[in-house]
Image (cartoon, rainbow, N blue to C red):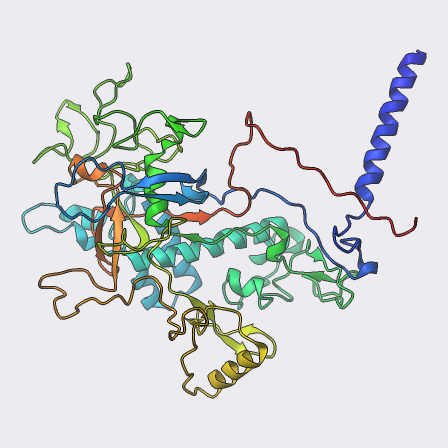
Length: 543
């Protein structure tokens, strides 16, 4: 009994020590000032986390690989993906292609948010006429493929590159808005739509507010009564003032919207770069041990063929593609790939990253602008041909408020400098913008040449006179990869690449989204050696 009491006392003592240590404020390693304490100035430090992926995404641990290295032949004699070793940073990528149901969600949001804006809805519609062929009876797909529930988990097609960009921006805002409403940092979905029961209201609390936008919210321009939730974050700044809460009454403590530093909001959804897409499709992580690649790949799966070697599925095709002229699905009575056109987005086994349909089904748009010689000039870390640097336009320079378009999104202009300007130069530029005067080109301090915000090769020297007659390469040509239901096996190789104008669409091209991963690149730390990291010693002012 005595021993039991002693053990219990030790456990309780340990617990009290843990609680007391947790209640103490952290200190700055460099100044000794405590964080998260209003008495010392309200310096805030947030719990360091490895953020989780947004909805629909899976983590892709980056690394080095030979871009273009999986190509075993060049039947088109394009010579446009020459081997070069590059490094891709860790990122997130959609587990599946964006499906018809996903796109219908997008169009539904537009129809209920802007019921009178027929232009916006029309511009979001996929081009279903891509199914029409002069010598094929594909007319039923024009009406049924996008909207019929039989195709709801099939990949959306007829979407051009610009439409895919718009979807990524919309998805970013809807995901972040949902996070804030579910957490209570903004008015909940229930209260937004009038509530229920005794607290029900005749109209929603935010009936006439413009839609949520992540950039506008992070800039402090989307807040106030009818927007702020019941679980706002306490503002520790000495200058903070008590504001009106969601119920219209003044709160007890000053509160604030979520900031980027809180680590709550997700990064923007976007199209993957060509390097990211090729790296993710190849998925050499399954063939790697201690930085040694045991076996290369030609396709997203192992082996030189396109058929399954497993006992239960032996002989089945591993992707949805065209086996030969006039053979899109095999012989009746034993259909091999079970698909005539596209197939549901989870139809075939995923690759070693857990990604479905990285070969076949539909080609997929990537972010890059196409140039045949992209391999000649490239960065070996996160190579990308598409950097067109922009800045958000200011509506009120003194208050730092962003200018917004009619949909509540920040207006972006080409950036005027590649570095942080002196404050006096910044004021001069703002005054010039306000007066709508011509701004002289800014000099690049690194090479003395006039600064150009376009570093994507978007303004490469390309003959526009020959466009449409001898070349289709122009400033708006974008890359797509992966092969489709109507392509031969050659195009299933992750290194192959093709291009199309950004405003063109096809029944053989869809897309999936990606997201930048912030923080440490290692996805799984289990079973791997690491150096121990020691914590800094707390500073004691009183000795």
